[in-house]
Length: 211
Image 1: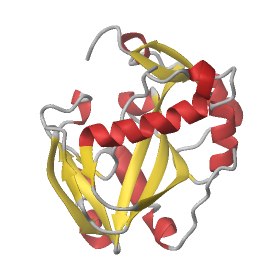
Image 2: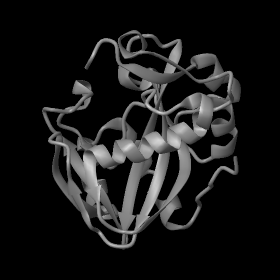
Image 3: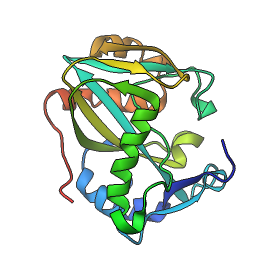
Image 4: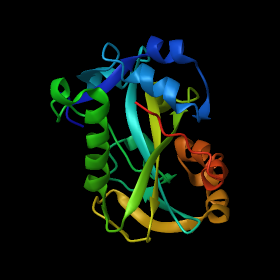
């Protein structure tokens, strides 16, 4: 991790004022509006943000599904977040860096562009898909979760045509909900929390913020 890497954060009080929660929260509009209010987001050095619970780093977490199965993989030794190495995941994503001109696009539009970049850095997605924001993720039970806030995206793929690009991705495959439940104890915490809400995804309880 480069010491001077700039990552997107909000002050913890912004999250708390919107309403504290644990796990997967499907009330997306309220939180998206709070996070991307022009006065809320900022960039700061990742080395300062990683151990400062006064800030929440904003992390997109993209779940991909096709025909009742979900993309899953194990984080290998080259994972950027070493505290998650060896865990199974159902989310693709990472930190948001100031690549786009925020003053021109605004924070939310820049964030959406960054999500596409993050996904494209880790996998080759060779199929048509839809993209929805379905919820927010928060977990205060461990040191990683305390300094991060996840924005959960769901991409419905037309075909399961995905190949890995990033070396840290290993054992990648599409698994059924039952297969994922059997692997739950080996999953990173965020994936465990999302697994509990996949039934809502399958039943169509998807909320897209109208911003």
